[in-house]
Amino acid sequence: MRMARFGMALLVGLISGCGGNLSSPDFFPQLTGVVIEDVTPATLDALGQTRQYRALGKYSTPPDSTEAFTTKPVAAESWESSTAATASISNAGLATALRNGTTTIQARLGGFTSAPVMLTVAAPLLQTITLSPAQASVPLGLTQSVTATGRYINADGSTTTSSVVETLSWVSGTPTVATVTPSANPATVGTLLQSTTPVQIRASAIAADGSTVTATSAITVTAPDLVQLVVVRTPANTSPPFAVPRGATINLQALGIYTNSTTPRAVPNAVSWVSADAGATVISVTPQTNGTLNVTGVNVGSSAVTARVLKNDGVTSVSSNPATVNVGAAVLQSLEGARITPNPAVVAAGASLQLAVIGIYSDGTEAEVPPTSLNWTSSLTGIAVVGDTGVAVGVAEGITIITATLKQLPESGAGSVSAPLTVTDSVCTGPLLASAGATVATATTPVLCLLCSVSDAPLAIDNNVASFASTNTTVGLLFGAATLTASSAADVPFAAPGQRAGFIISRPAGELLSLALLSNIEVRTLNASNTVLDTATTQDGLRLTLLGSYVAGQDAFLLTLPVTQPFRKLQLTQNAGVLTALQTLRINSACGVAAQ
Image (cartoon, one colour):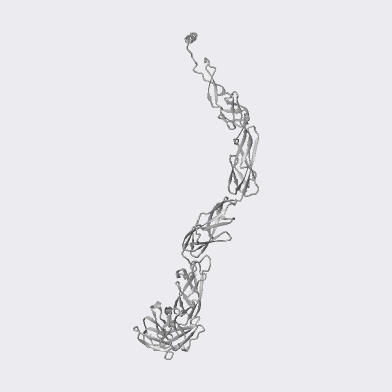
């Protein structure tokens, strides 16, 4: 054993003598300390400026090494600033300047602490803050930007002005009226409530020496200001384009969209209106005392109106987009002023009568209202009934009220119109009617008859006993006459002896049917070839029956003759006579078969 040890020692010695090195395979470097890579004192010349520090670990070397230790970069377990108010340092070794002064930076690792490294902060010193604007009036609903500018003293004593670099703290003196963002620069002031008292917006910052520097801005929240104008039609507040019938009037209103709401509302300021149709050829406009505008359609076409309103400053204004107004054809807006025709309306029991409504259209003209747009009713259906198209049918003698109502009721004005309908006894049981194919013809004998005429002849066969044709004869000598002939579509049959035919005639109320006039009337029947079959005068077979109130507003009579055979035509002639004054006879109905 002693010999083995001696041999090993001799071998090591020999190797060493020859310049060799033998390290122990069991050696491991050990941490012996921590240092900061750059120990040169540093200066930061602006608050917020940073400096990155790095830590190096110190490690042991083998016993036979010529170096006392080795270093390599490491992640420090922690970093420390001796004066944290001057500069902070993060766990990653990043130092940030906070306030003027000096501090030392150290790193810690494995129980070792590095030697301190000096760090100086020498930033410009904030002296004053100026807020811009210093005061402002802001309409409710808008925001105001406020910028903070600082005046700084530099290390060399010079001064500079720049945006405040320190962290700003913003506070509103009346947060219920105006708010402010807490730390931005510029700050945003929001408005919540209108007020005549200015709100003090205060900005403060901690200067590099630790002092607090403040400034204020006075913000007054004024009434919301007008942003946009829109034109609507009242009362439904519909938007353009607007339609108006010719002769009708619509009302327009200007609504404002204000800074505190996107919902249009009435404008308190005066509204001025401008029409694109200065000559009023398509529309005419009339401003109203309440600020609205009446627009009336003049002629079919298109035009536009524009509204204008001053803003709160009383100088600038806001105008609406042109609102298009399209004028269409006149329409029936209601049944205001309408009437039912014929008037008076009279129908015999068992007979029918076409009723119509004459309405006043938007342009003031009168025209028949389409029957399909009306609902018809009778107050007494035991007297008369009325159909969907306005045809009334007499049921029994009496008076009922007929009412026509618009199916689509108007926004304003009357939606219905009424009139009485008189139902008479059926004295004309076989009327000759145009609706059944009857026709009417007239003739005058002009010899020595001045102004002989027959007017409105079709009304004698129109199924309306209240309407009438007229025969007129004037002063004459001989042979002057006016004749009305009603022709049936087919022969009127002869049923039995005693059958009569004739006319319902009348005179205006208060005017008597004189004997002189009656003596000049002749009624006859004719066949299709115009051959006279039966004829009668008041002196020979012509019967006159007083009908009383059979025709409303007129004294009516049934004038008949006996017939002996079928006939096609029924004729009435009014002769002028000799030295007679002007005579007028009303012929209300032609009766192919009359009551006996």
